[in-house]
Image 1 (spheres, protein in one colour):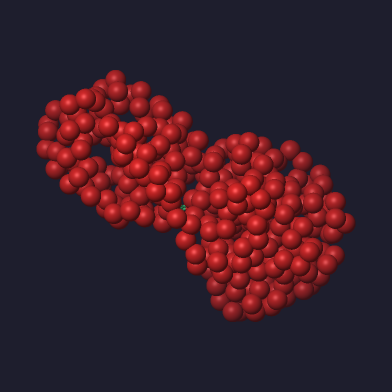
Image 2 (image 1 turned 90 degrees about the vertical axis):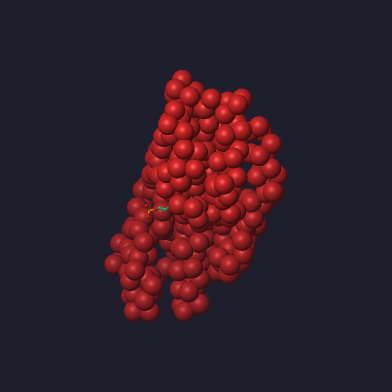
Length: 324
Ligand code: F6P
């Protein structure tokens, strides 16, 4: 293998740049030619492929976003789109691929590998932390800390006015961000897609809590089955039915996707990037390089996509016990 390429795909995550840097510099260290593909699979189809050098990744380890840009490609979902992408890789003589992204990106990588056999290794890049085969995903720690900083600030104003705040965090299908910033931010409740939310119980507990606490923070993952924070706040407000109590909503949104990556994300991204290149060289393919219990582990794309990384029961218990 002499020429490999790297791309970022799907929702961006802080630390993707640190991962690109590690991929590029490890490839150069191993005397491979390394190419960057801009705009993910869409860029692969359109031949947006450029040679990268050590200096191409200078001064990016601390930056959020991705210098390779990211995209969600509809065309890559089609056979014709993937054929065009393969022809572009062939024209550049690329023999191996590194995909930094989440489960949607790995699904694309797996289908592409099955059709064209180009060895591919993934790096887990998503703030959602919902990928099997790695304890943490690149960007999760930064997103949690961003949300936590906001919750700390909301707590100040909530306490000053005796208000009940519903804070919506990202996580269309996953409650990891909500759970960790809920624990770290001392939330009274956390509502997540993985567990069923009992609004009657929440209302009852909120009424009880008001005997000892004048304000409350409730963290809602955007994908909770009862709705987003706005919808849930309206339902709870109607059930509590107390004109003296004030309810507020803050939706944190995409600020959780940006910003300088934390030290933990930079280290994780660097380790996964290096492991992906080393794996590719030693014959790993159709799999992701993740970190499990502190060690590099290669997990098949099939398992990454189809197996579920379960939330820890004691995390859920912590919220319940520590909020009394
Ligand atoms: O990166 C994952 C994620 O942050 C989800 O939690 C969220 O629902 C989604 O991306 C939103 O992404 P976009 O606005 O880019 O479609």
